[in-house]
Length: 131
Image: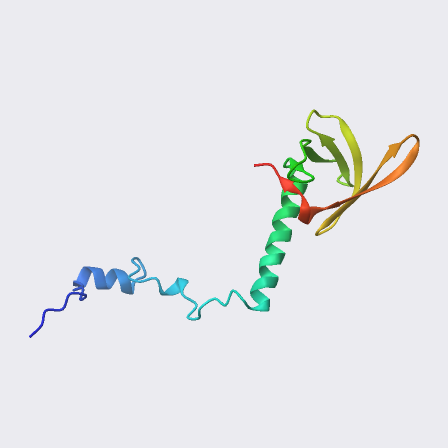
């Protein structure tokens, strides 16, 4: 007769605790029963949506960002008090432009250069947030 090595003997106290839900004896609630297919279109779509939501929340919360990796200048979004748009400020706190629309992947605004209105468009997907 061989000795079993993976057998766990449960006493009456442990069995009643498991039956009452006070103690968990395995991790079945976290297992969906199916492997994750990371190549599926649904998985890719959900990952993209999560990325867009993350980038948008970082921008709206005012986290500092650069326009590209090699850019030395940092910018920060600050919402207006009435909740309608906001402003971009550079790293030293100087006003850069007004933001009038923030979408899922794009923010648009305007600034004035030599008394002419210039449109500004930021692609949130390409911004590099400073950690």
